[in-house]
Length: 121
Image: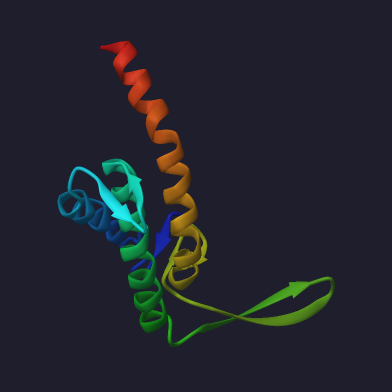
């Protein structure tokens, strides 16, 4: 399937579960090394810190056995070892590097969404 194959659906499930858990763990503000962070900032940061290692560990466990696919490229046959459990064409363990980036971009866009919602209501 294009969106996921195998157990690839666990990548967004783990991230949403970590976001949900972190929203209940964070108090009004959190202090890290003397820096005050807002509730939303702490929530997104903790979700990235929780979900990235979990996705990496789960991906390496699930994709221990790689599938050998033979592809033809530039007139040559090449064997590619690829994991069976993928999400959006990437193996699950590679999403551990992508999740913090996406979380940071979502947090950067969060104030814009809140401001637009206040204009609509």
